[in-house]
Image 1 (cartoon, rainbow, N blue to C red):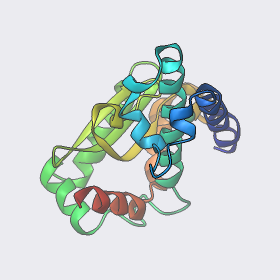
Image 2: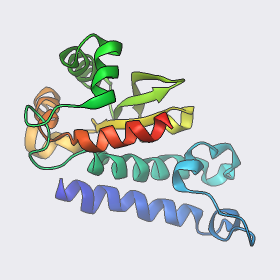
Image 3: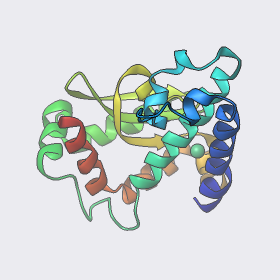
Length: 190
Ligand code: MN3
């Protein structure tokens, strides 16, 4: 996770800054305008010049994805120590049948994602759904709001789990920070 953060995530940050460096509209908004957050940028990639659009998509996506990823994990916070509570628990149960069923469906999506990508729990038109994205795409590119995300690129697990993605996914549930997921769920309910 240290290498993942210090090398992989850092590279996305550097690359998106490089890609946006010459673009005044994303760096120096006119007086009185608030500018564009990196999350907003993901929803308006069509406004990025075509010459750097793919680079911005991949690296802004990489930054936003990993920023969420670190926040939805914490040591000894998940697993059986602390399960989702409150409204999130209620909605997970009503949407997926049970918490265990949600874990099973999310894990299957994570295992089935071919190649590099991510699996997400998203808010979509008032509902919670599981989706996956290729590369560093983020649900915000499709107007969906992620509240939980799992990196299933090989770089996320190869050093510790080699090619056994299933073991990585299983272990990851032990460090999911449900308090943070609940906080994000409340935010998108507003
Ligand atoms: Mn990664």
